[in-house]
Image (cartoon, rainbow, N blue to C red; front, side, top):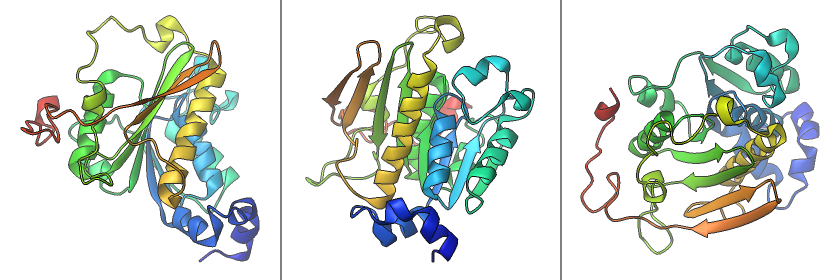
Length: 266
């Protein structure tokens, strides 16, 4: 139930026909986990908090550094040296005290993945490495959690939603992350953000789009990104959408699945 303060706070949502009171109540009841309070996770966390997500968690064991501040807008100069989870907690509480924030100051790994996911309905991947990305996508499938996955390049980015544990309107299984990207690129072939750089405003844009996709998933309006990969070219400001389907050979929900737990990551 929304109190008087919340009714005023979320008034611009509530007047939207696609959201209304029931949609805002759904946001209030949602539990969302964000992996990483960095370039993607920072803006996603801010907009999810502003939207009134009831429980908002973040997994990040890093501390704030000066070079983070070019894009990680949830942190500020006085936060340098602080745990990112603590910095994020302070900003989210200041923005919206109605949100229950949970900071997990640990590195997401195979040993804690299932326990971390168990307390949430929806997961956002703001990680910055392929190992975590594949681990998280596998774990979300096994835990039957919806995953919103984004990736950043220097001037390019992509975004998709994965519900591989569910079927589509035709009764066919939805695609997995591995249907889109069967294998991670060889180590050293894709430069890190530190090596190649990244446009800060692009991280803000994509992180905000992750939050919007999460809100759409929770409230239930529009066509989601399940089976669709949104590709962004920020250098030329172009957007394209690629459709992709389930690969029968994928090891998660394929015809002969081989991944049944996370033991390969241990």
